[in-house]
Length: 414
Ligand code: GLC
Image (cartoon, rainbow, N blue to C red; front, side, top):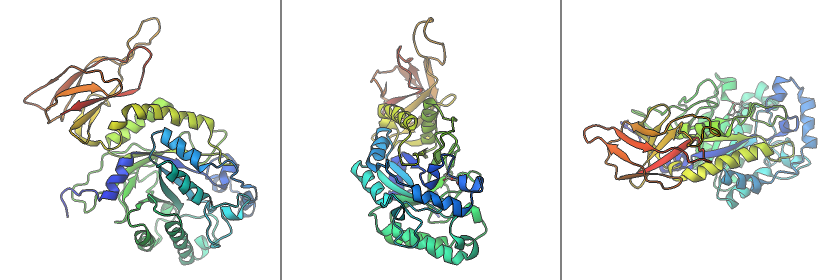
């Protein structure tokens, strides 16, 4: 047992990806009512499977999706190779004819996805369901189902080159079953030794540790807390996945969109806890990116670009301020201070007074600071550091008129 486990290099690399795109896309996208529509609207299997005959994927442009991810500052994409409905976006090599190559699309969409990602320098990850509403064996002959699941994953491990990781989801559906995870993860370790293995612990078990091969815990739709890793034999990363509106799969009648402000606050909160943020989009029936979703991600990307040096490799280090303010330790003798609720300086006739300007104090700063400046415009900031305590205070100037970043980051040099 290590007192404080250190991350294996591939897990540290995953943490440095920081911000990723989740994509839920499948037959359900044609109905535009979320990815659970088959189950929750009780659509008989015989009726639902007809959706295969209208699945064209004609607007699915993997390269364009990867470009959007890059613009948003995302470094990896997790795509649903198969969701609970049981339909595969990859060529299952006749394991089943319920796949994209046997639909009007007639293409291996996972091959396109992987290629699109690589052309933009984005790391591809595969979501794969473990629960399956389509395979009879899932209900009648579980060992046969597990063999089918394992063969499917073996195909994904061996036909698409190096994969960033596997994101499983569905064990919660049969929580007492023996899922033979040793076998499943063994297949991955054999072919993709450095793939991140995730198995979603679900909405209600956020941050829960699982099988020893698991490399990252999940915080589905939550707020990650820093993991207490003391006494653990392995360093495990953390990731929080979240929908842009209510559903993962496309819904044309879901108006519950988050604001860009909320997305920025959430990304900052994830990094505060040392967790990755995996933000979902749901392309349409034909694989088109929804315009609003695209615009939101592009806008978040503008923010990410301003503060990029503080967002990927910087780690929690016990620095905290008032309210949501916090600090991270960067590489190369830098500290980053995330400042919330900063006032916009302006005229009473045009700006609504909110937030504050002036001193921001942080605890937990145990290193001598030489200078500090806003990352976005390089403005040097006045500061005082108490020689005997871990208190550090700097003068946070407000946003100039015309600017509001929601969260502003200052970079201190040691
Ligand atoms: C849930 C849902 C699912 C979604 C997933 C993403 O477990 O079953 O539809 O894919 O969360 O985190």
